[in-house]
Image (cartoon, rainbow, N blue to C red; front, side):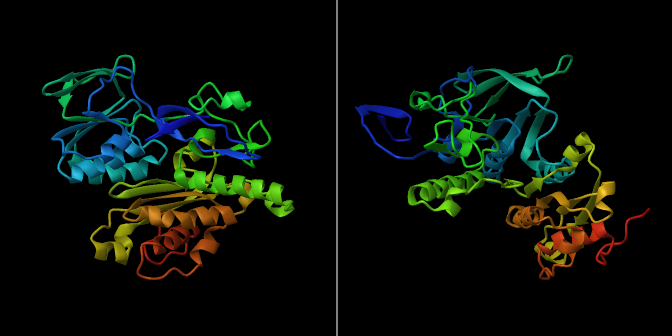
Length: 369
């Protein structure tokens, strides 16, 4: 093996021979860097953005996903004015549009320009800043003129490091994109080598990687100790929650309403507005909503299990775990609604959303038919 230093990107020139019975590859991913971006300290990725040297007056976020919007929230709070450019037709892809709409309304004051269906095609460093050129992402569209920024954040995705570690020399199969395929025990095509985290596929989330690592470690320990129970461990999570740590936070898990429509899945929705939540009103932050989706197919006979849910509002990320648990346990609206939630809390909005879906909520007027 070649020894590295620092961030593990620089090679020292030294080599070591390491013997092992089992191994776990956890080499992660790195931020995508656009090839036309200049090598300049005013062009950063999410890691570089954390090394705050000064607050820029104008900041451009390349990519309207979670990472860019999270970092933008921080810089905006410190006084930066934001522009964001996104090739698709909306920010925070993956979350339901109704949740994002609430987030965007609350954050409109942070942005000078939200450039949707727009791509970045060029950039150059000047004494005044980084001059960026845009183009329409769709034929016939229009693009804004070039703009100059004090700081440009590249947040257009991450790429796995499978190709960077020469895993193929150990016989491990690596895809053209740099991912390593694994089975439900996190085992690669080489039986004694496992892999976890960003390098094995989407979603690239730390909380997914930790659970994958637990599985790999348990399987390895079981095989080495002759413990059949440990050796049979598997990664079989039904859902993995996503959270945008912005202000307000946006969190979702399982099936989204947009996905249900696209897949032709009939769902019953329970939507609880936080302006009916005593805790949210007391906090002065009642802009949020909690949404639950239940199976409403004929086979469910009116008692469909929860399929997904989402929230926008303060501390949404702290509460999404309950919805994930409900999906894992196969709960229906009655199960969730009859679970007594403490009052006054933001978390009780989950129970009330279930009651709305069931038609038994007394905290909001009944929906008009």
